[in-house]
Image (cartoon, rainbow, N blue to C red; front, side, top):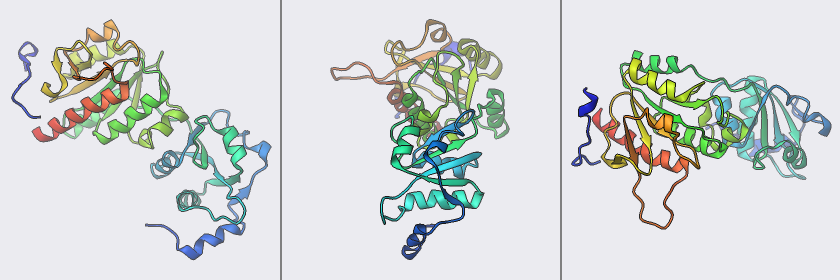
Length: 297
C-alpha cells in the first residue's frame, strides 16, 4: 500500500473447590504448610521478585512461573481459610512450592503495594521478551501483528493496566524503553491482575530507532496518540501490522517518537478535563482497533 495514499474512511462504523467439610482440615498442621518465624519472612527477597494479590499469584501459578515460596495469611482464631486462598494453596501443593503462614503484620511489612490480599509470593524475576520473536510468531501464524509501544511510562499502575487491556484486546506484545520507564515489578504485576504472565514485554534501548526499524524492515504502520492529532480515533484504519504508541503521563510522546508516526489519533472530549491518563487512552484506542481488525477478519 502506498503510504501517501493511506487515508481514513469517514463512512466506516465503527471447579476445583473443596467441599465444605474439607475446610476444617486447614486447622490441622499440613506437612507442606509450615509456621514461619517473623524474622525469616525477609531472608529470601534478595534477587527474586515479589508478587502480591490473589489474581497475580493465581495467574502466575497457572502460567507456570517459577516460585520460591508463597506466604499466605494465617486466619485469626478458629476462622477457616477462605476459598480463594485455598485454591492458591492447593495449586502450590501440586507443584511442590513451599507455602508458609504469616500474620497480617508480617505480610504488611513485606508488601510493596499495601494491598496484598493475604498472599505474597517470591518468584523468579520476570523475563523480558524478544521483539523479533514476537513478530516472527505472528508471521508464522499468517496474521498481522498488533503491538503497543509505551514512551516513558513511569507509573506502575498505568503499565499494569495497559498490560491488562492489551491482554483483553489481543495485543501481541508491548514495547518499553530500557531507561526512563517503569520495570516489571510487583506493583505492575498487581495492577495487571495477572496479565503480566500472558502479554510479552520487550525492552529496547532506543524506542524511536525501534519504530523506524519496524516500519522499514517489517512493514509496520505506526499510530501515535496525541491531543492535536490527524484524525479522531474512530475514523482510523487499524489494519495490517500496527504499533500503537502511548505517550507518557505528563508530556505525551517525545518529538523523536512523534516523528516516527505515520498518523496520529485523538479522543474527542466534551467535559472540563481535557486529558485522559495513559491507560484509559490506551484502552479507548485499543478496543477500537481490536473491533475493526476483528470485523475485517
